[in-house]
Figure 1 (spheres, rainbow, N blue to C red):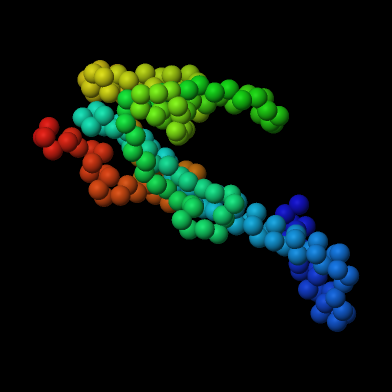
Figure 2: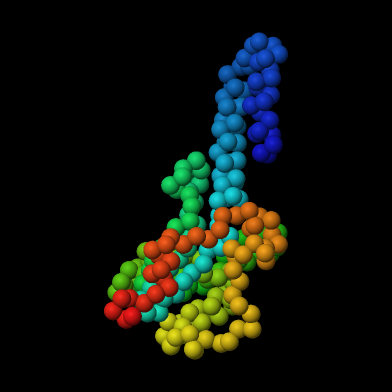
Length: 205
């Protein structure tokens, strides 16, 4: 479909050049609409492929009781906008987070069910959800990650299990075998947020 849309403006221009006549108004409007749709959709999918960062990490700071989320924002209605696209860091209070398991059924080639775990941000003192962000790709993985996050925030790093391998650094190109991820923008935390998310409040040393 996209190839046909892309070819439509070319066919119209070739017709005008060869005959010196413009086609009737109805085909012209269709070709113009097809060209606009092609341009919009092409830019949207191009930015989806090239603007998304290599990873969207989450940092848990026990001393500050804060959670720092590196999130990729996009807006399908504004594919040409610079401000509507890009990675941003959101900071949430740990006490306002609540894990949610979600199962969605739909017609897909690999099966019918998609299971995810998201973290809901609640308005302080209420159950009103003001924001959500992705946490895990399936419920079993999400339960494990959420249990480890709770252990860390409640008891500290000594409560976590020992892992035989160090955490993967998605910015390290030497371990990247996926060309799309290798070309994707690296994860870059703003300097002030990077320091804050790794440290305790001043009064705690």
